[in-house]
Length: 455
Ligand code: GLY
Ligand code: MN
Ligand code: MN
Image 1 (cartoon, protein in one colour):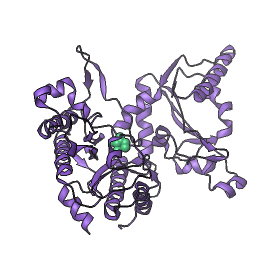
Image 2 (image 1 turned 180 degrees about the horizontal axis):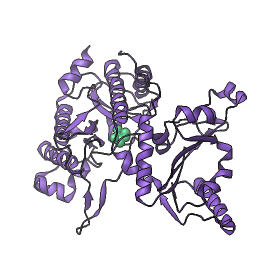
Image 3 (image 1 turned 90 degrees about the vertical axis):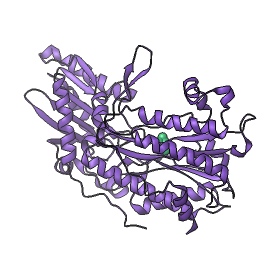
Image 4 (image 1 turned 90 degrees about the horizontal axis):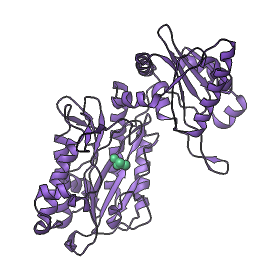
């Protein structure tokens, strides 16, 4: 086991730069006030809560991870100001729940212009809105937040009788932040590389500890143990550990199925580090040796992933990796007899008709960052033929590359391939000439997997 990664002491520079970037975008639209809340705490049952996780947009701008917090940014031609509303110090609650910054320490640590008690938010909001022309806030995303905003705006409107003015225009601040977050800065890339390394270690441990007769949850436990020991704060999403036929259920979770001799095991699991996600899938034989049929399908998926990786670089279309993977997968389906060439026709015919979707029914990539399925537009609308106008990949974008084949039993499919489900998924930072894979500490080549599992 390598030395665990621990988050470096908090450094506010990257967060200040992100706030400045957002305020510049607000000014370009005429300026105004941004109001951005963190996530609500959510009850799991009775008085037990789900683990609190800050809202990704809020955290991206502040680095602040306590619940009950709101960021206000004022950006006009003449003024720029950041204000955090956060919980006050509270000795009684800190004895039970742990440290709270309180406004005074939060203002200094997180390098904000001002910090105020969260309980005073509703009282301050109308004043903060008065004399602004525009609001930038989450809109139609959360009804409780919409109601808070509506109440504050109505209060500001009623003050107009005393000579104040109230904002007339409301923008969805997430639209600005979605685009900003799509391009990862140096701090984000550092944490994403760490998330990739930790996630990969979990997969290595799963391959090393896998034994036939265990259950899927045994492997999930090994992965979670490794993530925690290597420095992850959480999983990035619920882990899929799918033995045999379960791999053909795309959103299967780790369950109680046995890992049987002769079956494959598909694991899709990722760690979260500094709130950034890793997202890796590996598929390996439970007994450490691929059968000829498993090997044949695996080699096709791996070749498809290699083609997709080769198509991932700045200047390429977001859809280029998907097209490259789909072509290799479809060719493989025809070669293996999964698709009948006499009935389906050529590779191009099978792609055009969508026949390949019987065995490859998901897309190859999604953005990844603070959210495992990260924000950011994939296209800028549709062309005249109603096809998406895919955006162009640019340096600093991060995406997954995750082709797969899922072969359910069917009379028209050779039986030796039934119930084989294989996906290989890595995370890629787009660079000028290609991409950097952050998750390759977990092997993908058959020889490397078999060798790892022998030791
Ligand atoms: N683990 C979620 C995904 O691969 O998209
Ligand atoms: Mn993924
Ligand atoms: Mn995944």
